[in-house]
Length: 582
Image (cartoon, rainbow, N blue to C red; front, side, top):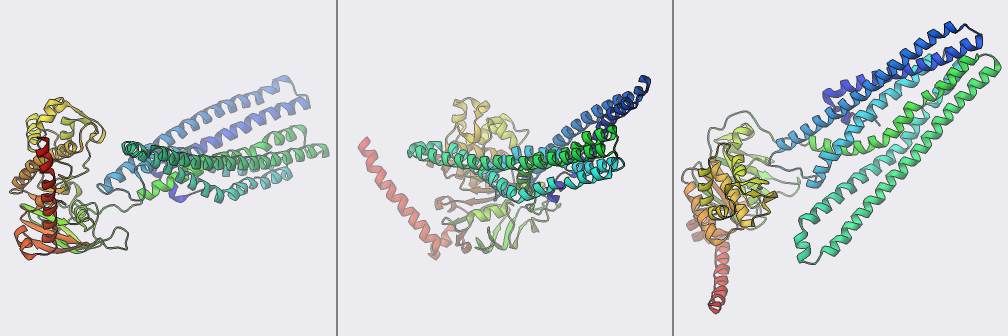
């Protein structure tokens, strides 16, 4: 099994494979030297040579043993170097690829699948490169070299041994197609089980609340059982193919031994020559026998390698090298589709000036978040363009672009570190005073002060704080970054009314000097914007200030009035309940 795409992944590490194969060949030749010295001594014994003559085969044996030891040890060390170098290189390339994709995720692979491939998948590829590939090339060379050595002794035996050798690759090829399907299913079941486990752990609270943990347990057991069955199929296939290869290898070696004995009996081979052929017969088949054993490791590594290749082959977002010289953002007749079929954005044009607050409103599914993805560079339009300072973002440098823009959403990630270190991600030299000032702006200063100060450790993804506190902390972190463009995508969705009012007041003040873009389902938050784009079904239906859109009486006005009526109705329900408690 020789895959050119997988070979390309090695890059500059190909030299280690060449060196390892050469050392393995040297070790084999040294092994033949040991065998030859034994047969040489037998020849001297049958011919009645003086004891002093045995010094030559003895010296040959000692030298061969030394060469064998050095070659084997060096080949082992090179395999280790190859494995470590390949793993390091692949992990670096995988990580670099994820960085290049940036804010865009890999749609074809779940988080659990990506983790398994990037960790265990690369471990499997290590075995593919360091064990299988080196054995593959050595197995191709060894029988030919042995034939060239043995053919001068007896061409009949040598020819039979060489003719039997291809039977092992044929047996490997016979099971390879079936093996590919099995290993593809194996990795599919493996990642599927990982997805289910991660999903169950992350949603454990909800499973307990809805008393669905028992049902989920049954589902997990089913997934584990499917994985067990596919694992058993893999083991059965390995056992069957190993049995077939053993029959071929030992059968071929037995045929070589039988012919050597016949040659000795018929007198065209002397005892020493017959003994040499008998001892060397197995050497014709052992390299390919080892290749067959490594084949199953290779199939597993190849299945993982295909997933890594699919990740590495994803097209990178197009970036240029120009510096950003303005902060006005524009969408110019942008059309976009996630699947190449249904258009999510249809001929959308929007302008976000260098200063001021621009809002995007609309019902769920109208295309608001897709516009955000365009603005932060996660996706590129199928047609049309996104520009900053009048220049297409494909022409500006990634670093320059992201040095100007910040995005705060309802699910902004908070890292497992102190409050201070989370702020330092946004600004390396941030002072404690700046941190406290930012916390004040989002109404979080008192909570942080009372729970340990800015040295308080936030657990993974902010699990030791409430959803609203996590969201306010993420907002505060972005505020100290002091960017020129801020995109707030449902940034106040989990926040209480009092804190929301404080945050929106800070956002409005910020818009006097910066380009502020607000996306919110709650239209009371977008009403103060200088300009509002109202979207329906992926298109901009209305544009103007809140007063202008209300006067027009279109979709925005209907949605605003509906929300307002619902909020007032909720207040009417809550007020009597509060009076009863009093």
